[in-house]
Length: 117
Image 1 (cartoon, one colour):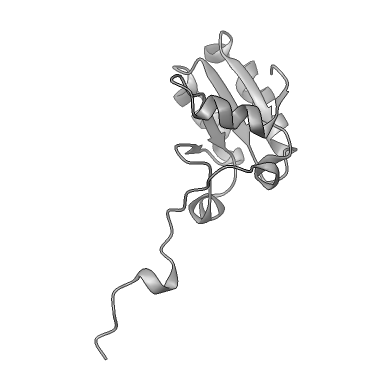
Image 2 (cartoon, helix red, strand yellow):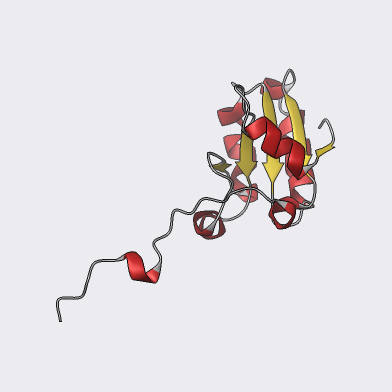
């Protein structure tokens, strides 16, 4: 793990021509509700089995609700043989500190089809 990174720096990198791979380690329901756009969801408990999916990244930033579990996730990713040449960081403060836009993959109650009756 290469340390922690501020949310403002993550936002700047996210908007760059070479954005980092942002890995959200929350459960799928929380991720669907809101997440950093273009981030990938790999729940923490699945990370040991799915870390190989990240070997093509040059820079990985892990994200969790408050920035604590993502430190452990970054350490795990950084210790994987296939990511040794990759810069791996945890976003300080987690999503509670994120001031950028959030995406959602869930449908709000008023977005569904109209009831036939």
